[in-house]
Amino acid sequence: MLIVQDADAAVAWYKTALGATELWNLGGVAGLEISGAAFFLHEVNPENPTETSPGQAGVTSIRIEVFADDPDTFIERAVAAGAIGAGIEDHHVPWGTHRQGGFTDPFGHKWSVGDTSPLGPFPR
Image 1 (tube, rainbow, N blue to C red):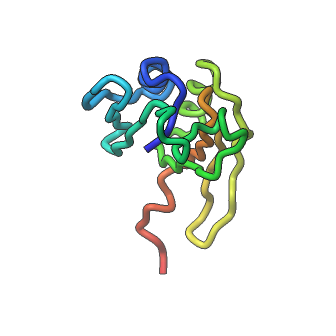
Image 2 (tube, rainbow, N blue to C red):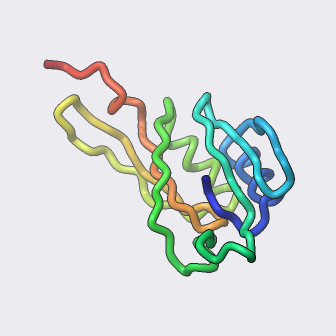
């Protein structure tokens, strides 16, 4: 569950920038999915100081990992919608080449986006 300052703005951004589908929305708490992978977001609750957004805390310790058929386009779409992008690179791993990059969304959450090669099958 991602903590955000403004749940409505976050839902709209994730739908536009990442192609997320809204599963449900309770006003301040919402369920979304990207290509069948569900995730949830929750608006900051001032009565619960243990749940802060990255913007409030000034840092995030979470990195969301997404595997996409076309990581370049996924990242480009997010950056075009206001994310701050990190370069995408080819990483040489035992199963071949893994293409990966990332971005920080407007709500302070870090995303890594790579191709689907780590999902297997792996050569022996």
